[in-house]
Length: 473
Image 1 (cartoon, one colour):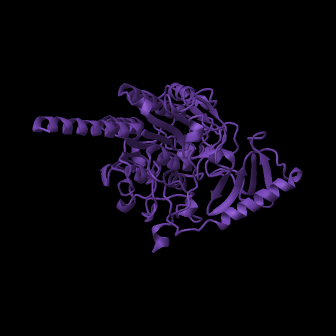
Image 2 (cartoon, rainbow, N blue to C red):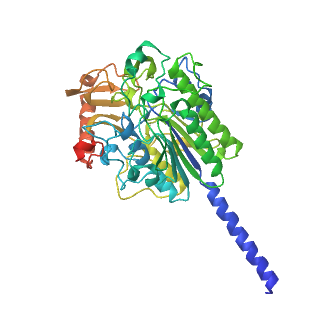
Image 3 (cartoon, rainbow, N blue to C red):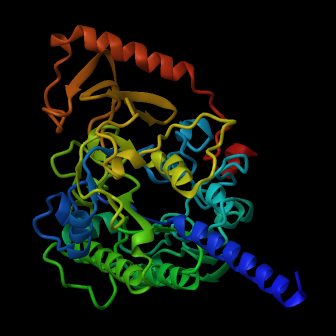
């Protein structure tokens, strides 16, 4: 073969391989998780709110799949976020504590480096990764997102009500008096961190939702030609509530509604960006929240709808979240009533990205893609476990939920009660958990008691990462 012909053959072969490689890359879907803070089950239109307008989320639900039995791994911030990112119950990795509910600015712990996050597993499959917004898995450098598989990070490292300063009005009292109350920015000296460097303190929270959305969109545009994963974790509607000038005072629901409507507008901008870039049909977007509403703040807190209690509680209002999956042409539109959890995202993303799930540890999630695509009518999940403060408070199996311990919403509600005779509820017939039917179904109680004990026996606790500096020293 002469040189020109040989060169032409080599060129054709290389071109073919390049096309094949790019085709393979294109088959890997992008992932976007939009994670709210303290959003209640009944706080958006698609889940029944009568006064907050969420047209973009409603359209997302119409075009995608609305899950009505979707749970988080815990009913407060830190452990819930650990569960989402690792696919594991937080009791397994030290991110749930009997001494502190969440991490604080004086905490020295954080998500252990030994844990494997969604960002790490997809990064190994060739994904670009970014975390935007609230982290709350450790604010020290060794615990920040860039040490857990994310290429970049921009956001507030913990809750937006931390580092509160003295001399300002009591937010809880003001919130009870005025549904439109907005606290001074200076009252909360929370920082914005870019990668590992503080770039703003105090964070201007009036514009924080818009800036988070803009940062996520900038990353999407910069990485449109390769598979990417964006974890966008809003600090709101956790108190203190702030809304941008385009949304302040626009909702019938007061400042809380303003906040939700601004988040909704941001979702619309992200979906529009995906469509404009012609990558919407290769992108899975998930919208949900970390736990239920913070009810003690009255109109500054959300609503769990027909569900009982809220944030901090293992009743349904604390751990069942409004959830939407959107992927045009792939996710089968409709309402999904099977049980799912945020811990299912890691194995599902692994399956879709073509990467392996971690095999050296216990995962608490399942691949739910067959349910998303309409390839199955029943999922693998048989149980949901409700942990709080290193104790198993309740277990759900199918329609049945058994409470061993009950306690009210974070900050209010009934005091902790250990039940000598567990309480049983049928969540399909009684989603508000009003009618204890244990006396009528002793065989179901016995079965769930045995299932719960088998689960407890399989959980090995790790060192508590949430204790304060003084306790660790």
